[in-house]
Length: 292
Length: 292
Image 1 (cartoon, chains in turn blue, red):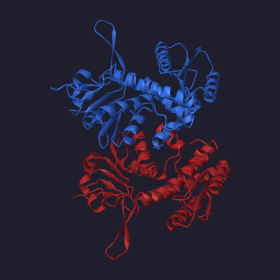
Image 2 (tube, helix red, strand yellow):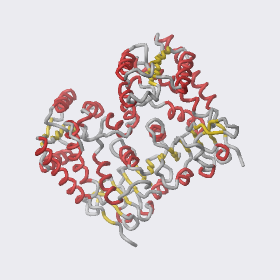
Image 3 (cartoon, rainbow over the protein chains, first blue to last red):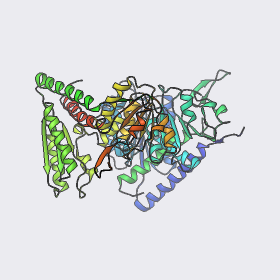
Image 4 (cartoon, rainbow over the protein chains, first blue to last red):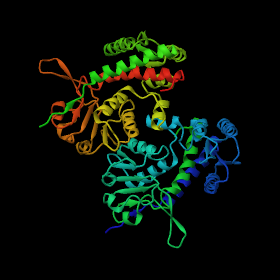
C-alpha cells in the first residue's frame, strides 16, 4: 500500500514567516510603515499564556511591532472594551487580537463586536464574515486561511475539486467552506447531524476535519488519493499515564489511503500564527492605502 | 411512473400574506405600530415597474404603510443616497428596498452599503450576510427565505437531509446554503465549475436550482422522490413566435422522478414578495423592541 505524502506544516509556516518578514522589510524601507500587532490576554490560563508568548515572539521575529497587554482575571468588561477602543484608534497597531477564552463574567460576542473590522486579524467580526460571504476582500480566520495555503501548494489547481468540510463552527468550518467555494471547489459541509458521514467523506478529493473529536475520521472514510487536512488538536491519554496530541483523523490508518495528509502536531497548527502575521501585514497595508 | 406533488407557491404565498396581515393587525392594535415599506425605483425599466407596483399593492393589502419613490433615470447617485439616508432615519419606515437594476452611472454596491442593516429587508448588506453566516438573527434575502418556508412544509424535518444548491450568487445560492445548514441539512454548493453536476445533483434529497439557465437540470439528474425547488425564471421562445417562462429544471421530465417540485411560474416566485412583507414586519418589530 502506498503511503501518503506527509504535509510538513512547520516547513510551510517557516516559509510563510520568511515571506512576511521580507514584506515587512519592504514596507519599512519603502513606506516607513512597521506593521503592529496587539494581543490582549485576560487572566492566567496556562495554554493561553503559551499561545500569547509565541505570538509575541513570532511577531517580533518578523520585524513587526508587538504589544502584549496582560490584564488580571478580575478586569471588568468595560475596562477591556476601553482598551480595545484605544487599540482600534492607535495608528501604530494594525491587528487587535483578544485571546479567548476570556473569564466568564465577559461576553465574547461583545468583545468581538468592539474590535474594528479593519484590525480584526482573527476574522471574527460580523463585518468580516459578511465580506467573506459576499466575495469581498476580508480578513479571514487564520486557521482556515492557513489550510488554504497548504492546499494550494499540495493540490495545485483547486477548481472543480470536491471538498468536504466536517464541522461548521464560525471560526473554522464555515469560513473554510467559503474559502474553498471561492477557489471554485464543489463544497459540502457536514456536521454532527449528517447521516452516513463516512460515505459523505468518501466523496472528497479534499477532506477537512474540524470537529474536535479524537481520531473520528477512519481510514476507510477516505477516498484513495485524497488530500486530508486535519484541523483537530486533541489530547488523549497514553498507556504510560502521560498524554499525547492527536487530530480528528486516525492518522496511522489514513496515511495508507490518502494521497497527502497533515500530521498532528506539525500540520495545520504551525500555520495559524504565521497567517496571523500575514493578516496583520495585510491589515497594515489596507489601513495605509498600500496596494497588493 | 408516479407523479411528483406540484408545490403550489401561490397558495403558500397567499397563506403567508394572511399571516402577515394578521400580525400587522395585532401590531396596530397592541403596539400602535404600522410596519412601513419604502420602495425606490430609478428609471423606467418595464419589468421593474411591474415588480414595484406589485410590491406596493401587496404591502397595502397587508394593512401596512407603503411608499414608492419613483426617480428619473438621470438622478445622480448622491441624490439617491440622500433619499436612502432619509428613509433610514424615518421612523414610519421599517424596510428600505432599492429596486435593481439601477442605471449604469450608479454603483449597486454603494447603494446597498447605504441601506441601514436594520431596514435591509432584501438581506443584501454585508452586515446581514455576516449575521447569517455567524448564526445570528439576520434579515435574509426574500427568495431563499421563501424557499425555506416551502421546504419546511413539504419536507417537514430537514435535519440530516442532503441538500444540493446549484448556483452560488450572493442573493440566492449562498444565503440558501446558509439557511439549509442552519436547518441541519448536509449542504453541498455546486456551480459552473462543478464536475459531473448530474451526479452531484443525484445525491440530493433536496435540490435547489438557482442558476438562470433554462431547463438545465434534467429528469435523470434527480434522485427518485427528491424535493426539487426551481428558482429559475427564464423566458424562452415558443413555436408560435411568442415566449413562455420556464425554470432551471426540465419540469416535464422532473415531475416523473421527483417526490415534489415547484412549477415555474407559480412556485418560488410568488413567495418572494410575501417574504418581503414578512421581513418588513420582522424589521418593524426589531426596531421597536417587540419580541417574537
